Length: 163
Image (cartoon, rainbow, N blue to C red; front, side):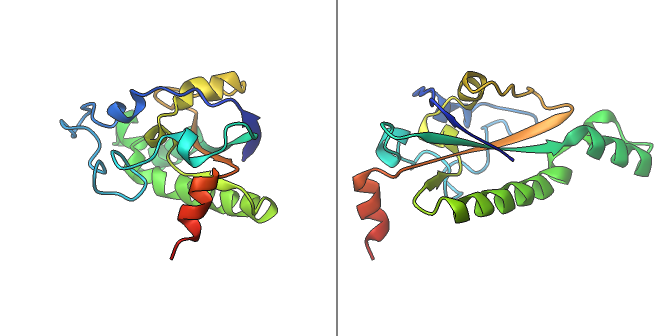
């Protein structure tokens, strides 16, 4: 996992990206209003993290090219799109991400992790670019998953401490 400080690029429109149609999902992401940590009920980043303190960019790199090659060998009749279908690899990549994030958090217990920065109005592509990390869209060789972490605001600390 890559762990580096960054300057988050804030854009109000990022939460609307979840509503953009994509293949098989004419109304956008099915997690909208349904998954914890997904829009529209998520606070903007400045209300979650104290942006006067360092903000960490935590990036998991999953070898999608290798995964696709293994799937092609196992299923020679599959198309390239089938070999790279996120339904097949994303769970493994997310597990890898969260193992790394948990290890990082053990060393940084005072830091709060923001699991879905886009939901908090962060342009993840621009934020990563500012830190020298290029995201492939769509991912072909390396699929990168990104979370942010930092010092929680006083209001967020109070909210987290409330019963």
